[in-house]
Image (cartoon, rainbow, N blue to C red; front, side, top):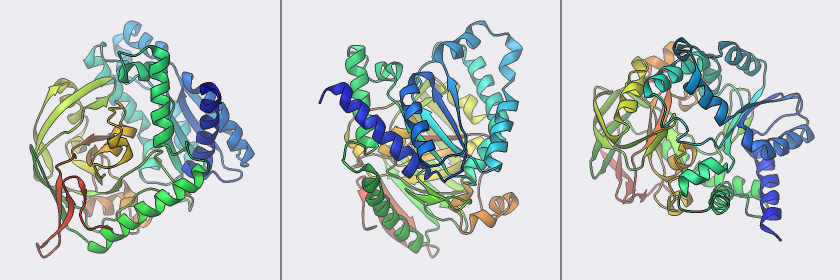
Length: 415
């Protein structure tokens, strides 16, 4: 089989995984799909698979790097405080009406790295404000949704700058296909087995009822208090609309909600964070009373500071996730410059918005109740990696006793 034929076969499988495992799209259900224009081959396959599964209306929305750059190169200054509110309101309306959400990522992670950071920050904030009504439907897990990736040439060239473009793109494609479990004959069955393994982890953690987690490694001594009534999730989960889906393809994490006011200590990132076209590296922050009180980065510090100033919740945590150093994405040795992949290579925390599903009976809780139990609210949700081969984690029980959770980057006794 030629390389091109094999790529086509894996894209076909990825489309099936997206529709049947990632989304578990239901007969008659509409689908809102966003993607970079280069991902058109995958979009076409997903659209065909969706209609074959009985979808209602599939609506694709495309982005293009040249069009994105044109705004920053030629747009009037006032426009960077504006966003397409009408589009996001329409998306929120679609989700309220029962539509599913699929995002294909593959944009150049450094597309905006040479643009005015002030304009990038303003545009990002305006977009976050406009997107919030739609984001809340996703963050609250009201709908079935999924994110997966396509190997774009620009992304590949950023990852493998010393390789010819075709070779770089193929290496990225190989990595995406392997991490997405479509290189096996029955990827849907492979995902079912993987979900079972993640479910065992969440059951153990939920049975422990830890009040906090204590992270220790070089440059990190961080105690993350867990929200009252928190619940661990990982792999497939059931949305509030009753549909079980896999929000992230790939995924290696189990995660829950921290208490926004109970995070203390200091932490150092273990991998660079690619955010809004900029690379933020060697992040070091200190938490006091749940809030970041000091922050620095060896690279991209101005971007980090603007991110932290987005709103009142941007300096507090909305997620804590556990990923063993032996995860396939970690062992690949690749830095993807893409949070969907890089967060599945290491334990991580997320600034900003919490997930309401990570509470017991979260679907029945109001926003005020979630806040009272320690859930954070923000216009952002930005993950960054804090785990590695030497990370130790203890679970702290309500009586103050400790249970080993991770030792040297691996699960200790959460089998």
